[in-house]
Length: 193
Image 1 (cartoon, rainbow, N blue to C red):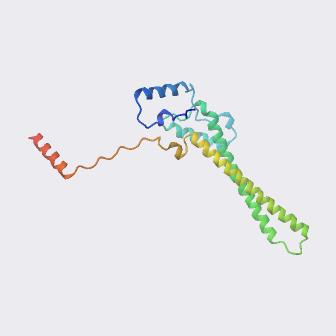
Image 2 (image 1 turned 180 degrees about the vertical axis):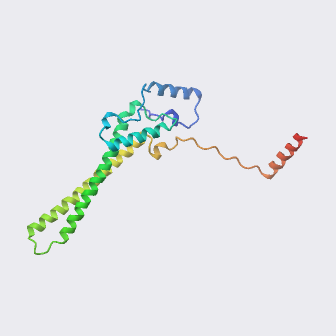
């Protein structure tokens, strides 16, 4: 199975005119008539952060000469935008869970030896439960970050996915050595005479 190529606008290697025309023809055959709008899709309505990310992505893509996403990619872009919002929500949930754990941990340290054993055990269970909640959220955050990275690569928004897509700058010409400069001066002088 062959690996899908980069969009034609991101190819930097030298290609023959025939190869470029073939690539352009294949891409044009898969180009829907409608592109992605700057306005988020209806699926994102009510998701403020996801809508913000959608608009931001569409503005960035519109700055590029190459076509990176088309109307066929709308679900991928929606999923990325929703995943960003979910990631933010998980971060907030983790922050809250950690604050609960801190308060319970502090309260558990203030329990005196005179407190009934049952109450001490209940407090320790609450502390352990709140720490477990924060740890579970850490794992979900890690998985969400991995998903965002994977989606970002598909959308060409990670540095590695863009690596090799920008044309290399021309090599700087070496300044002429003294002998070349002298010969150029002589040539200019003779031509002016």
